[in-house]
Length: 178
Ligand code: SF4
Image (cartoon, rainbow, N blue to C red; front, top):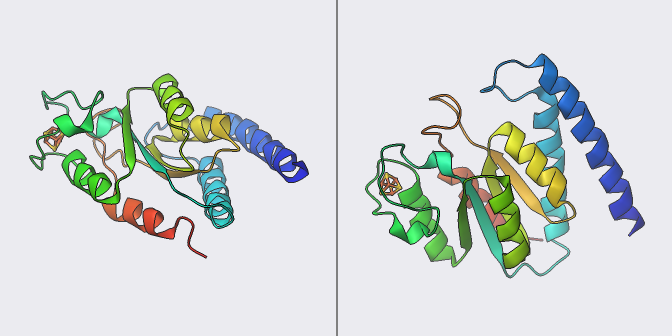
């Protein structure tokens, strides 16, 4: 309990440092050094904590902007609506989560993501998001174990973003391993 409280203080300090650093970082596609350091610290801790608990249920949280912008299928309600056409990463991710029997949510915002976590109560979460959503989401969810991965903003923010499926696979393999 004391350890969790101390860690919460570290998270609060990191979060305030991030807000200050953000004011000096005008490029929305570039993650600042505080957010990178915070996510690195959080991710190491999440993996370490996962080794002390039985992980039965892993959830994957994805941002809606990974879906190809012109895709007509509504995957926010059900990733199963994806036709796996190859135009974006959703198809490959959909196959992977089915194979792993994991829960997946494509969220259109932080509120929906929080609601999903509240209802699903996973043992471990792998969350993909942009800097602001990822830092805020991980900060808000603590002490839930959330491993964060920044999405790639090669086409700018909020549209046709990307994520490495290999990175997601590596984390799924690492969770809970002694
Ligand atoms: S892979 Fe799925 S979500 Fe992506 S464009 Fe094709 S049908 Fe749409």
